[in-house]
Length: 154
Length: 188
Image 1 (tube, rainbow over the protein chains, first blue to last red):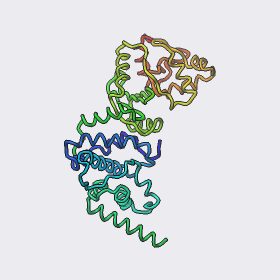
Image 2: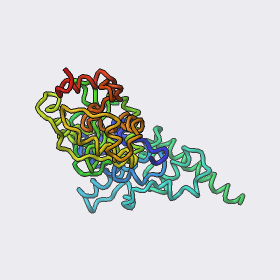
Image 3: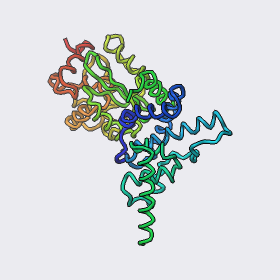
Image 4: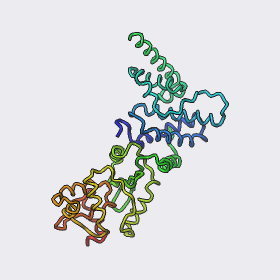
């Protein structure tokens, strides 16, 4: 087994209720069911590419947020969107940003990755982190400050 | 937080299995005549039957052996469930299922292949099975293979008894071995 990645059943059971609640808030009750299915099928397809079991909650909420954006885009292709869609890459962004953000405290790191790796808005990141928009904004800027400082010191 | 409606939950589980993106789909059969059973199928076939399953341990075991995409999906095991029901009702004497034994060591696979030829209602001995795989002195090792049989009932390790005719042992407990042999008319 890939070290630390839980069996999908356990991951799904741990997050399904929160993902559905998130989708209902963001996309409305009517659309939430299809997006729920889409989110977890996407997660399942990407699951074997995960290298560890950290940040799974943020990961699946990110997939859910992307599903909302994609659906909105399908419905109104020309409309301005609050959230810029990210590239269709289900590889966890923290993999790519790992070398850069490795030294950050967990919450700051997640906020930086979700903001700059996935280009998510702070509202979504707040949900992913289990806090709120303001806390997400603060965590991301604290992370960036810390990175700048470390860079100067090198 | 409110939960996920059952219909939505089942729809996802069914779709995941139907799309062929699971390493193992499983379900727990709560009341069979031999108690609670977990049944797992991979894309290659039936890969697991377990007595008295402890869900967390079984999940870890299946993930370790077949990959992390393990999901409960009742529909995916419909066929196995139906054949087991028929067997328990005495209406089926052989299983028509593909098996996935890739997680078993090579010696185990050879012994289990031989075991699969022991017919309904018949018994054989550990020593006889050992001789059939070309290791006549490996009766004990054959006992270990029976004990670790990943697919009991369908791979009929209950039909293997001691040279004296005593039941010896069973991974699922001797009561179950006795029940299965009585069902098949191999014990009076």
